Length: 481
Image (tube, rainbow, N blue to C red; front, side):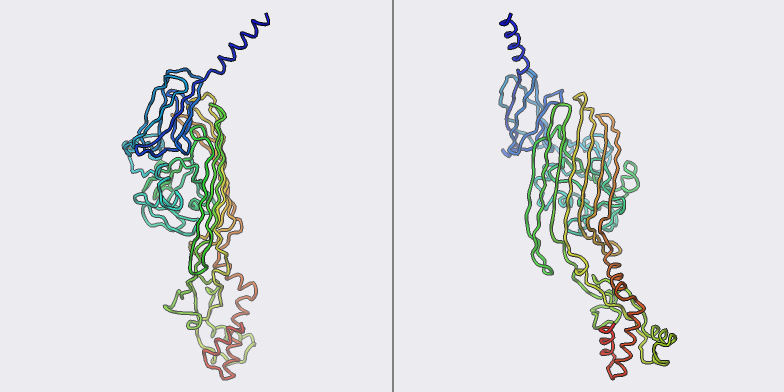
């Protein structure tokens, strides 16, 4: 009896662990490896992704013969037959017709570009890999009809049709179906708090109005970014970019951009991923101090000087009117206003470089839990994203966006025929501030406007009575005030 049970146990073990393994390499027609190619068993969701060198190894409980399907963005899909265990199948993919590429953004359902009712510009894995730009987001400028307004090292604003400011409220940016706009600003801060490069599956752009599908904010167009699914793309990948930014104003400064993606398929039913990205550099310093009101004007040549990138000098008044007020209050003798010229004088402002340190920084992370209860196309997703950063924003005034924080959480249920999606977005302004009003309020904090202009008039009057000419009197008055 003991021998009988041992024999049954051995046979049972052999059945449980009988597996079929297929391996090989995926390349293009030039012999270059294709990392991230999808290899799946036909009519199942079982599959793997090729590694950085294009190699793959697929293990399954299914006995041969069966077919595997190999696909890669921008290439024609191929099917190969598996007839034996430990079979080596090397696949050479041929570049496909761009019109056969599948897009989603045009009508919210998968369709070929050729069948799309509107123009769709697509930026896939192949284009991301080959772009000469510093990152994939900058590379979007090479798409037809796309303009990128560079507001800061970490804040780029995309536009497609029509006039737009850096705060482009007429262009929508969706990341996995979530509106990436900051609620407090009503426009997206570029990719400052967006997607890491290692997790980008594809980028689709619809130039022109897309309001019928995506709402009023998509007046100028929409950018749709899709991330990689850990069921289809697992493993660990990362990148590090180092460089130097050089500018005459503040010299050479380090530039660092790094990211890492970790994804794992625990089974045919559950997979998860985590992404982290970090960018740090020094923004371009605004050093021009040209007079906004007088060509070639300077603080020395224009009493009412209002300099570019100088803040606090926006406050000005007519000093003769100030003198008349001082006379009515009995502060200066009657008739003194005859010695005070009727000219506008502005307060002394602060250079922008004194109000900000130009640190450009972006820290972002996201995670996702993916559940397929029946191991088919029905999927439940939970995705969370957080990001924080520093940048400069040019609107009506100049703003230092400092320690800005944004978080999003999404729950989605979908299959090939429907999806239900809900998400929340929360942001915090952090220590952000308007640099123009900061300069004005710093001036008023140490000396209010009435006191400053009163002292200016008093010092001008004293210098004039002591024999100073007009320019000398104004110089003495500004130094005193």
